[in-house]
Length: 563
Image 1 (spheres, rainbow, N blue to C red):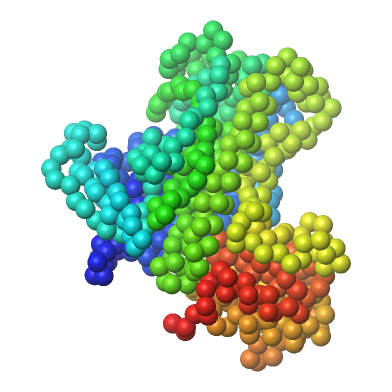
Image 2 (cartoon, one colour; image 1 turned 60 degrees about the vertical axis):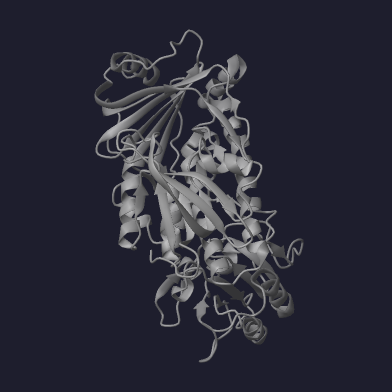
């Protein structure tokens, strides 16, 4: 990124180049924001570690232009197989969700980090390795950050002089043990999970089940839970979460892991070879009360310690990365009121705390089952063949249900109006659903084509003006679209189930088959304003454009001058 010449060395400094710090840098580059990215480690971590990308995070990665590069080096998972006490239940078709990115991508953290680093370099940035933050001070205008250099031989040994850099905003992406959160006074105590141990390896696998890298397997057994999942370049990961009674507190050998895996999976032919790494660990979890303080923000593990249930940790951090980047882009372009940045901590902190509770409940199902629940699982496997979907909860795993119902950015004038909105209608704070539509030239399109980067504006908001299948609503829709024209980054789209657009109307999308109206639960003329990250911010009736304008003034500030 080009150096600054206004008293600041750069707009944003990011501390930490794990997957979330790298994604934050990619998102800022996508928005054209100058940044510096520092990482204490001189080399990327060599092992796969976090390795999956669920559907909703893929949507967010696509919105900043890096999803396809990651997909090129990933396996596509379409099915989850579950066995309860040795009894198979109906598989979960995990890709069958309402998203363009149903198949789950499985790769490896090392591959993900390398790919994202390459994307940063393509955008003109770089990862500055061997640099460690040792202090920072913030004031009303910016943050002064002190950076030291680590030695070539020891990532923890400092050498030489320090450098002081001034930025407008600082992002801590330096992991749970990182420096930034503690300096902010936002540290928290971790809660340890008692009597549970994880033993894990990445190795080549042969067995009597598929090795086509498009399936996951979960085995629930007495006092434990086993997972088998693919890792990039022909490997599989096998992990065993179990009660630690009489379990040695050490890394198991390959032979020991193979013997346990044969017993748990019921396949005596299972063979493990060419191990990449074997490890064991215990679990602790928690989340910070706040995710920002002044001009400093936390993303990913810098603000929480996630349990491994469902591989949600890295994926939840990707929401952080994309969410803070578009807000900073708007603030740095002078297009947002203070509530815009304030909303980040409220939304993401609340979501991480919700997820923390969910994961603890997941461990109760997988490890802390006890005799009664274990017997119930066995009974359910016999009489409820679809229980696998209930246990795995594919929509929840895919993070499509992530929402911000209490966000300061929400304003919903339709809540409770049953004659306007269906029971399943997405509300303010919810993810905006996709739907098939017809463009003015007769070609097929989707709402997602217009929600993310509308008209090429990377942090643009989209106003969907639905006619409610009423041809007479077009006048009200035109008036409403006129109310937002002073904010050039708000891009109107007419969604017409009956009305006809004319030459000088905003871009129109035909919904004669009612797909978009149905997806949004609408039966009347309604305005839906959608944020750059694809979440609904505002809903209101088309005959009250003054409410829409008031919302824009509250969130964006005074009408923006044309760029």
